Amino acid sequence: MGIHHTYKSQRGERSFRKQQKQEDLRKKSDARKFRKKLEQERNNVVVPIHKIITLDLLTNPNKK
Image (cartoon, rainbow, N blue to C red):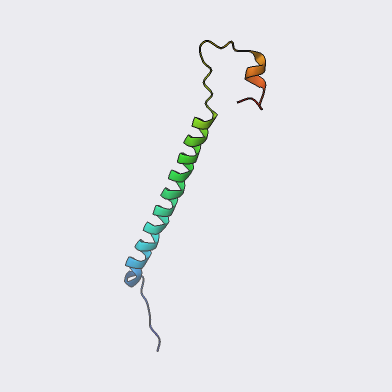
């Protein structure tokens, strides 16, 4: 005769696994949001007020 587990006896283990899964998803989501925010900040280009905005300034990808 072996060890028989019932649905109720494994309740704590299931809830722990579910909680771990939720925490992992939350961490992934937070990391994704943080990377997106950093990328947006990096892409923001501020042109000084005294500088003339030309088409070359707007379209040249090599100039930062």
